[in-house]
Amino acid sequence: MTAPTVSAVVVSYNCADLLRAALASLLGQEVAGGLEVVVVDNASTDGSAAAAGEYGVEVVALERNVGFAAANNVGARRARSELLLFANPDVETPPGVVTALSDFLGKNTAAAAAGPKLVGRDGGLQRFCARKFPTALNLLFLVSGLEESRWAGSSLAHRYYPARYYERGPAPADALAGAFMLVRRSTFEEVGGFDEGYFLYGEDLDLCRRLRAAGGEIWYVPAGPVRHYTGGSRRTPNPVVVAESHRSAARYARRWHGRLAAAAVRVVSKSSLWGRRLSFAAASPLGEGARRRARFYADVLAEYRWREEAAPAP
Image (cartoon, rainbow, N blue to C red; front, side, top):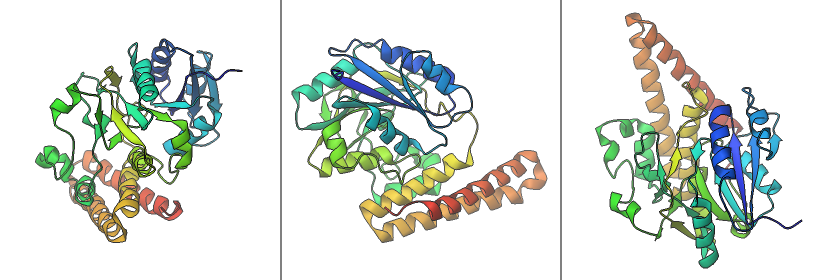
């Protein structure tokens, strides 16, 4: 059987309604040579796997949640195309986007990956669709909590390209968002796919860094925009999500900035989480809201500790 031009890998977890919209928009793409869709369901409990089956796509239903990176690798192994589209289950793709990306890679053989413009629920630009690699200082701001303050727009917190960058292009980038990126399989396999030590967050930065280290170029192509309903599978606060954002920052720091940077990220990360835990505990006499937040951060710290011990070394 002839392989299609593009294989879309969609990892789902408890987001059946958004998944339906994502699949409808992907299957509506007109791609010369065809597009196949492989949905890898991370042990959802809301019928996501059955929802995907309604669209006639291949569904791989996992028995446990193995994480975003590992599930994407499962889907990549099941896919048949040379071009692998990694797409979140909470995106809606307007017509022509997949063709624009695949045509770009077809004409630019040095390019290992390409990604489009992403916008949020309100239509606002999501700058992480194409960005520079974070420095160790950026990671420290991320885990410190200062990112959520008035420093959020500072280059100390983030190193994004200026807004005008996103209206031009195509243009080279350091990294793309794992929410929607087209990757050349040959280079993807050469670097070993996604690092499965990342359960959630950071895996896209790490992959792009390894693709570039292997000689591949990363490109932003201003197609779309693709609408990204960020956090579609996270309707309520989840200690695992918070713990993983911190743990992934430390893992990335260890691989790309060294042991000292990773140690600093861990110290700042745990200090920040303990600070929140203790401050809400101190405020607990003021009401149930503070007590609930104190319990939440206690759970985050427990998750962080357990996952740090269980994760493979970078």
